[in-house]
Image (tube, one colour):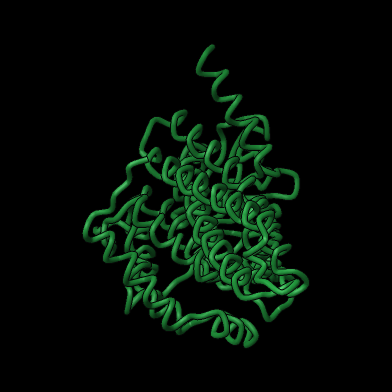
Length: 380
């Protein structure tokens, strides 16, 4: 695939990679995570020094007007440095939703996101829904001039640090219906929301939320009643393409670290890299990485296509990325031996992150089934 970056995009990539290499190496990451809580200094550098929080956001709200390629560049660099901050959740997902819902409240919040003043999370997944985006049982009932929300949201990544939540709720119909889902914007500390915060195996913060009789004003409704699902599907496709790019960055680092380790580690009087069977294994890892790179590019370049074409490209990419992440991660750990699973060595932490990405927004089996269903629908 012939894929070239513009001069500005190349500058963005080089600037971010240089910053992360100089200011956020693996030991710095470990120390900051052990301190607990959000990395405020890093987030402010993202906003003020590097400007990456504004990169894909619309200019009308203080963004730089970038697009999918800028997001891909940033996510790949963050994956290579194993950054756990919620760029995906705040900028790609919440920012992507708000950018398509222009209004005074949305634009004001987008400006706060671009300036590093607000982290926002989408609360959409529910205990029974798995990867079915239409399966929403949280309800929103009109009451007076506002709404009352009731339901449960599960694994809201970025939830512990979010100051605002975008919550999906059903205003009509049942879980079999594509219509009837709306999005509401509310403060994370709104009365009636119970938080259960925890950390995932990749050190990212997540929350389970219980909404009980949560009253919100009428202007908290971001979308038309029941019209939110196509927008949610579009933004989740964009987020899926973004984690594909992040996985590429993480896999590239695992391949490089494994090759370097094999050159240094000696066994039976010679470096591990001297054994032909291990050379073949590392070549297979490199080939899986190259396939993943092409798949991530394909998904990114198809995000502006028609919905069916976009969804097929994203699902094809996620299936390839999921298989590649498992193969590269498992082999990187195995070739490092017992050291591969220690806290002190980076490769185990990268393996944890790509293992989460493999499942995030659906594993390979889910996306293969989705791709097949889309092809059947197109042929019908």
